[in-house]
Amino acid sequence: MSRICGIDLGTTNSLIGHGDELYTGLVSSSVNVRTKSQTGRDDVSDDVVSSYKVNMTIGKSGELPIACSSIILRDLCDKATRATGEFIEDIVVSVPAKFSHTQRQAVWKAAEDAGLTMHGLINEPTAAAIYVCKDVKDLVVVYDLGGGTFDVTILDSRAGNYFVVATDGDGHLAGDNFDAALAELAMSELKVKMRFRSKQNIKQLCAKVRRAKESIQKTGVTAYVDMSDFGCTTDFALTVDKYVSTMKEVFQPTINLTNQIVQVNLMDCEKPKIVFVGGSTACPYLRQWVCDETGLEAVPCNEQPDYIVAKGVALYAKMIEDGVAETEVDDVTKCLCIENNLGMAEVVVEKNTIIPTTEVKTFDNTERTRYLNLNLYQGDSLFCKDNDYIGTMVYDYGEVREAHTGIVEVEITVDHNGRVSLTCTDIMTCDTQKIELVLK
Figure 1 (spheres, helix red, strand yellow):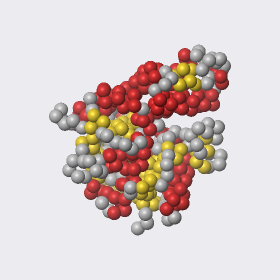
Figure 2: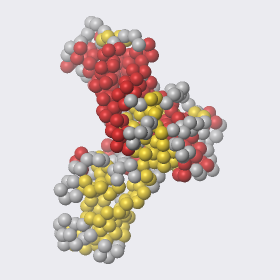
Figure 3: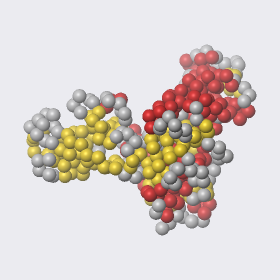
């Protein structure tokens, strides 16, 4: 088998490696859509697209994220080819734990569009834990805060393998939100007029406050942001106090999710350690705040937080190559539910079920029809409108059925990569159909 490389396809930066070796440093995930090439993060021209990962999906709205991801994946493999002298086209990619079936399918399609062979997906916190726990087996909480997404995962490696106990997160909360909040603080404090708040000006301001933010994280000294493009005669002074208060306001939901996942899934006597992953956790103020609020002790780790997932997925790629990945790593799925006629969620696959798994539930038609339409969602809410829509499965009875006479068994399978497949069996005729999800 050819060498399989692991890729951390990040919101802000991406990396590629194999086993114990990374073949690149941090590669900006920004893409120039005019030249169809990877570009620097500080390039804020109108042709540059960044942070597209948070909109990853299949369908019309996902075309740009897939195209940009494809360019980055190809670029990383080309860099690895030059570094190794061996043609690299076999990959494993890490994704946020909260990614749905359609988002995982989108990553798979991006790899195919890049002419690459995908051998699997792995959740980013799981990859991080593989690296951090490779030498010291422990019970850990992985706090993964990157540029675009937040994941929190409990993983137990004390028995020798990597067993995911539970996972949760927020697919739209991370460093970009912090940058946007600091930019808004700067405009509010200096009373910037609306005529200066163009999309391009705000994009440039977010880049400026990000650099100021990173300066404070390293030095602990007030950083100044040039606001002349906004009609201001003075700079915005980003102090440590402003930084910390804004950070707490933006990231309080991550504390709530972390405390909740520990309380629900672990006994009081179990004291996990916390692993910080993702570029946003490079901030010492954030790490100390999280430890104080959760009461958890941080795992000593000399590696930069934005390299940890990449090093873990590189190790996981070697596991797949060696044929031991599915025996050494046990991951879990999100809650999968089907909408009933009242808009309520009928749970088919419980949250944090170990994958791969197959679950079956019975449904019927609530009106006279030939086709049974069932909407599939991911999420924990009792109301489907508050969950993430995945797609609609359409079962053809072959004839019109009176209400409540078309009873079918819906079988949902979640594979080791977190991807979903569906079959429906008519109880009356025993006809079984493999169902393709139809997106709205």
